[in-house]
Length: 106
Ligand code: HEC
Image (cartoon, rainbow, N blue to C red):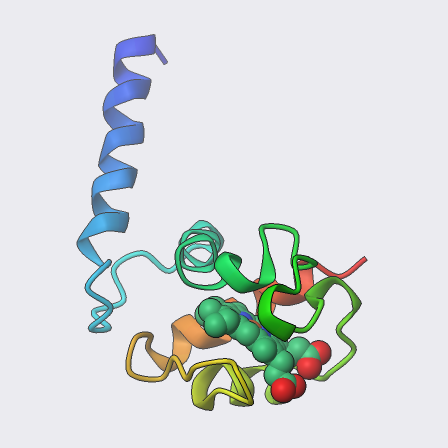
């Protein structure tokens, strides 16, 4: 692939990510990388890019041991100082965020 083509393809991917940025669940980009973008935008301020920032009492996600369904429940409904995200993300996006959070475990 030529460099120009690659640039076009890359910006198309970026555009589709921004297109779903409103969060109203039209499942446009469902790749792992969209979870990574959501995590970076919404979660890393407290949890950090590697999960271990622990800002304001946020749990160290790299040391988390909770099962997937519990993580989904916490991300969806919030807990303690963590805000709920069920109005921001679809159930599928929340599931992907839980999977992404698990990928930060050591
Ligand atoms: C305002 C800061 C804040 C933001 C933003 C935030 N969290 Fe949290 N998170 C916390 C805090 C605080 C806890 C600990 C809650 C408790 O147990 O009292 C926590 C706990 C968790 C847990 C449970 C970890 C465990 O082992 O118990 C997961 C999973 C998690 N957060 C994922 C996320 C994801 C994914 C996002 C983004 C969608 C996110 N968090 C955004 C503060 C935050």
